[in-house]
Image (tube, rainbow, N blue to C red; front, side, top):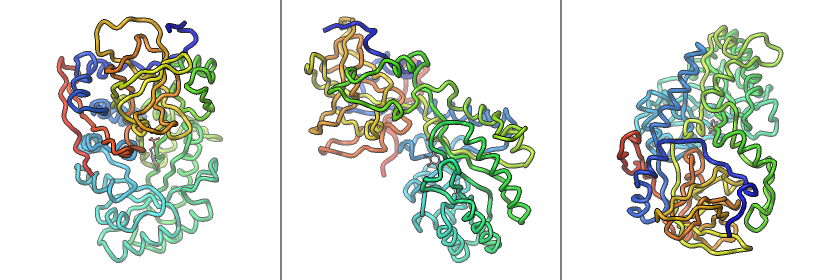
Length: 456
Ligand SMILES: *Cc1c(COP(=O)(O)O)cnc(C)c1O
């Protein structure tokens, strides 16, 4: 059942020596045995390096700024611990996330609280700890002002979240008229609140709309200052891209993929895939954004911010988690279907969240044979879950594995820390949630591991 490679587009993950070492030294197999089921491993050193790269991008552009890690991208405690240790902030959207962040050492004033119509418990905690609140609507602003008047001695720090003109159907943020009303209420609230500026979060990964909106908000900050408000910072949210695979593989895939590459002839809209290759990604995308000229401006974003004395806040989630973890399953069974292999692994696609968005997590899973003598060739197979749901597939696409997959082999999904691991996980079928294992010292012969401390 060996077939020609050309038929099967591959999407290899970009090189990651830390993951390679965890496989090569036998730790992945040992953990799979010890934990008795699928698990995620986390590579916090990658997180710390990504965070440092973002800060360096701000420093190199001489733009004052502050990075808040968007916690929703992964539930693990270790990334919050690393953000705290580095003096960075955390973006939270629930009381539980706020407690986690505080409990793992993030200072209250380094918290950014986002999300619509925030729970009163969350608002009270935010105000008590001096967190910044990105206010999403006028009624929420009223609640913040009255809470600030009644409950705390310190003023509420607020940003006003803007409904982007390019995304008028977004359910988040305030339009121009609402912003004017909000600013009037902020002025009237006097000492109760500190109006620190504006915020947005755009869907999509393009830089130009982010540059254009930042420029408009610099103007808004100027006008707010003329009206006596501090307005000295702008939060650009998240949404900077991660590149998972190389350009050639990605473009070849988009050109050649077709339904018979997938189990059951499954069809995906190419436009529904995450852009798994980006020529400019991560901290380099921030550098590029700062160097972008907004429409109708002679200056770059960095120049506009510097001239106006405005700090740039950002809330990256996915980009801080680039190469900060992977997910390991064990193959439980192999059967033939329509002349192809269909693998069943010991977990579910709930641990690979992209599968639940009309889409597919495309970076190729890597086969780690249990036996060293595995024959080589091209062995296409798709990957199903150990559940009774027809649609519970970890990979609909037939991956051209270099060895015949066998029960007992491991399947490693690369680069899953950003949104894949746990946003959809549930103990479906009473299967336990895969544990998270923190691995560091990966440059040493024998990396070190422990379980993550997230237990809420
Ligand atoms: C989800 C979210 C982020 C993080 O986005 P990424 O794409 O992970 O960088 C930041 N800010 C807000 C308001 C969000 O909702």
